[in-house]
Length: 125
Image (cartoon, rainbow, N blue to C red; front, side, top):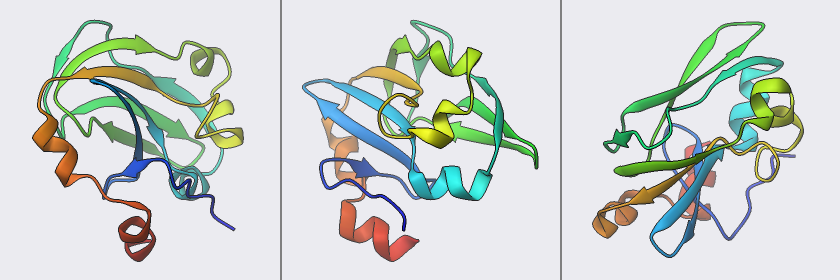
């Protein structure tokens, strides 16, 4: 059974977003990590990099292939989860907690309107 927490927002490209003020924690969904399967390598975005919504900012590699990860919001990267660099399988084991990818300080709250709620994400998958 796929885990889809109620307190998060989602994208059509299977990233999740946890909003906290003008900051957001971002990772890939449980559905995405199941599809990707065994994650063997993660590339994280550069700290303090300015990014635009829908821009590829990270790459996850599995035994099957590589997958771009897109930022769901425009802003500045203010944190990365270095633990996934040393242990990429954390993303498979704990996609919503220990396996998050990065933090962003977003600049346009209107972009939040483009994110999916739980029901819309369930329809997508």
